[in-house]
Each structure stands twice: as C-alpha cells, then as structure tokens.
Amino acid sequence: MIATLLPQTGLDRASAYSLRDLAYETSLSEADLRALLDGKRIPEPDFDAEVQRRIRFLTETRLHEYETADGDRRQRLYTRGEIAAGCGITAAWLSQLLTKPKIPKLEHSKALADFFAVPVEFLTDEPPRALARVLNGTVIPRLRGLIDRPADAIRTPAAIRIAHRLGDAEMDPEAEAALLLFIDRIARAPKSS
Image (cartoon, rainbow, N blue to C red; front, side, top):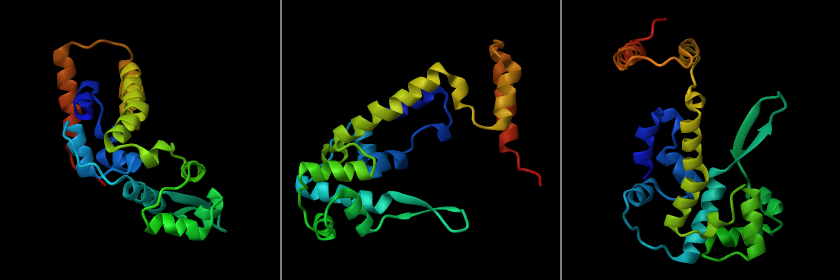
C-alpha cells in the first residue's frame, strides 16, 4: 500500500516513513509490516501476551529527554520506577505487567498510554488495525500534505535555492529531464574536501 504511494509523490526516502518508523509507531516487526503491506495475513497473537509485549516494547524504545548539569540535552530509557510513578501504579504491578501476560485495568492502560504519549489502542489493536491506524492517522495525511505542498519536501539548502530560482516556471519536459540528470550526477559525485 505505502510502496505504491511513494513513487507517485516524487518524495525522496528521507521524507517517507520507513519500515523502522512504522515498527516504532505500531510495535510490529518489520517482517510482519512487510507481510501486511503486501496484503498477507499474519498469525493472530495471544491477546494477553501481545499486550504484555507492547508494554515491554514501550519501555524498551521510548526515551526520556533530560538536560545535564552542563546544559547538554541527553536521552535515556525510563527507569521502571519513573514509569510506575508516572502511571500511578506500583513498581511491583509494573513488574508483573512486564513479566507475566496480564491485562492492565483500563485506567492503568490509559495511564501507560498517556505516559508514553501513544493512543491507548497502541496496546490493544490487532496488527492490521495498528498498521491502519498509523497509515491513516500519520503517514497518508503527511504524504497528501506533501503532494499539496511539494516544496515542503525540499530539505537541503541547495534544493531550496534551485526551487526558488525556478519559482513556478514550467519547464520543457526534455529540459527538466536534463536538469534532473545533471543534479543526479552532481549528487553522486565524490565530495571534495
């Protein structure tokens, strides 16, 4: 699905969601995402074990940003104590959620979701629904926005200068192809130091 959207937008890889981004947003493996994007079915996971895996995934992938005494910005994983305190649960209950397939109460699920800044559905969506939630809520609107405003996809200073010089001028297709070929060759050339 997403693979068919990217070529139509003319976006470079840097402005598109990668499988790694989708995995981070859904907690699904890249292999499962690839299968789902190809229209294949994946095995249904055990619900309790899947909720536990997703809670563990959040604790292993979401980072706490803080400032050092020197004023530097750093990131690290949250401690279990920070997570428990931030969710209003005991460290013992969090430990059980991470080690035994237990379903948290709705209020605890909401607290976990809020703490990690994800929707509560992150914990419970079936894999196809989790992927659809991210595609429909984030990826597709972003791609549509870039189609409506292609200049927003321009990221490098050189590309911005070229776009400003061209303005809204329509180029002859042959001239445009020649310019793109020229830019591709320059981009592939070894950088001089």
